[in-house]
Length: 128
Length: 361
Image (cartoon, rainbow over all chains, first blue to last red; front, side, top):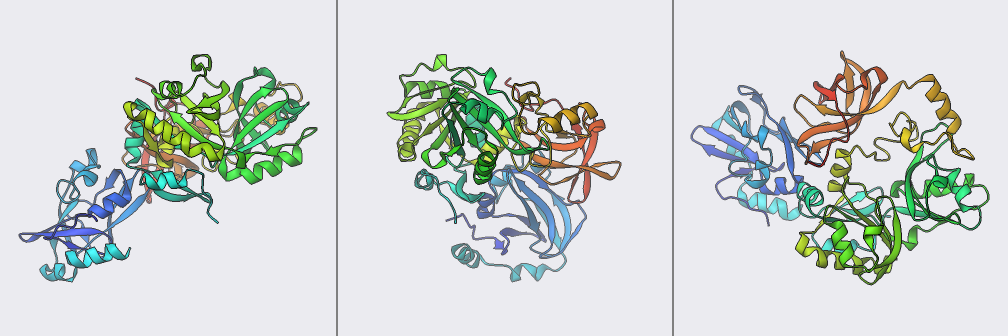
């Protein structure tokens, strides 16, 4: 079973979201990085870009596949993880830590409530 | 119906991630594509390539019959030598690319791509003169043992003197007690062997290689690593870089085309004409100088106009750069030429470079 930290919220598309003060940090789950395989490239949005919940905000590429990254919430990108440009495989080695992807200023702070709880995400993985 | 190699269970036991590959249930990776790739570059890796097909020509006239079907020349080989060749159509494009083994002038053995097994056999049966081919695909499994430590590993398991088996030479003998064709060939750019054995013996041979190779850090490797390894060498993959619409000359494979060989071959006249007229497009190797990863099917642009297409591409694990191959107009084919690759609607700059991309440091 994949690692599913208790303090995060999740999406059906295998992204996670972490409340950090007024901001929300976004990444992909351990299950996602495992399914992708070796991550070789992450296409990040620009700082200041507006993202929309459920819509694509970036691209993640493994040796074999190109996958879209979907925004868990709507808001403005305030920070991107530039370190992924040089070391994209950080997404594999530390998906919930150094492998974070963007930091977002949510348009509405209640949005996280609509995402999956750790238990609901674990159920999703069991069914897949 | 999905086909399985005799090693299917072994792959599952090793925890491989299985995928459908042209109708075959094959391992794409066991642990990590990059880790497996690195094992082959620095140590040794094992690949199940039992899905490949085998066709044999036997009896008086076997060499002549096979030689007429392929672009390279078996008459210039010694017994015990293998050659890479094109199985070409009348237009000089590929029905398939193959490795032909000369056991003797009366026994020629041809290894073909899994995706083309049935097509190739039908083509050869239709066009062979004198000796008819026999489909031996179900009689053989094949394991590729590749990497700088591959020769040592295989040598420890066989009495055959492998120091006498040079590149693209082969012999017959027992490996780990299993009767094999031991061929010093591969698709990775590394030294190593491809071992053909009876399907029932495949698991015994596979396990013996894994066991004996432990000290070398042997890794079972999937199709993912096979693809990145061959791409770094600019080895063509049928269906990507070569097909039945691009000729052997356009593919940069003039070295496997022997226009002057006795008896000729299918496709010769078309290639002579094309050579005289000059090539309009060529398969080149390029590096992305902008950021991204080139992939099969991405458009090649020059000044915003579509002028070609990427045939293969990857983030090269050893070269550590985004690399690819593409058919481009001849005027863009010289080393140093620049063009763009369109990635998700955005032009990313690329430059033609010398190949193979990977060279031993």
